[in-house]
Image (tube, rainbow, N blue to C red; front, side, top):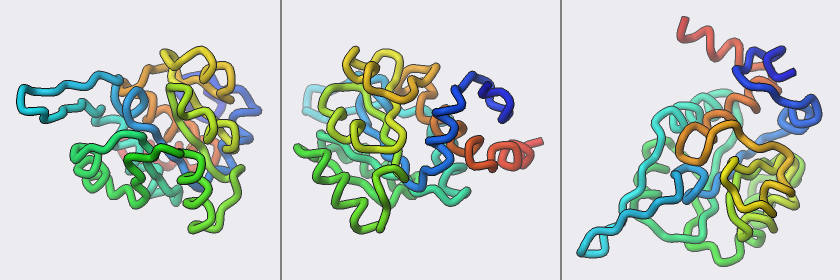
Length: 184
């Protein structure tokens, strides 16, 4: 069904219908925008690896009118830097209560929960995932997270999952084919 929209992966019609309503996509970082590995050197400096194709997917999604944000429980200068590179306006780090952060962001943007998507991988993401219009998990997410997701990305976190979600939303909103033609 998904390739009727030109996507290289299958997507159920119900998921496409949910994705058509999305105006804000929120990502967890560790395990979604990265593979979840944390590299720490002897001085305590932390390193993370981000996927460049995920970043380009975020830029394409933004160019097509969908807001992007990050809600993560950890604090990291690397996330600040990557968010700035991608012009992500809504970055909430050190969030002990992701649901309160989510609700505050919706209020500021005058959006309904059904207009938001959230991609997560662990149980701390469930309170937000249970409220959004499109809850997305990566394939190696905690089993409870996968159980409550509307859609599970074909690729794991940090390996293309964010790009797939961005492309899914563009396809559901009718901008994917036009976006891809920019490169042909």
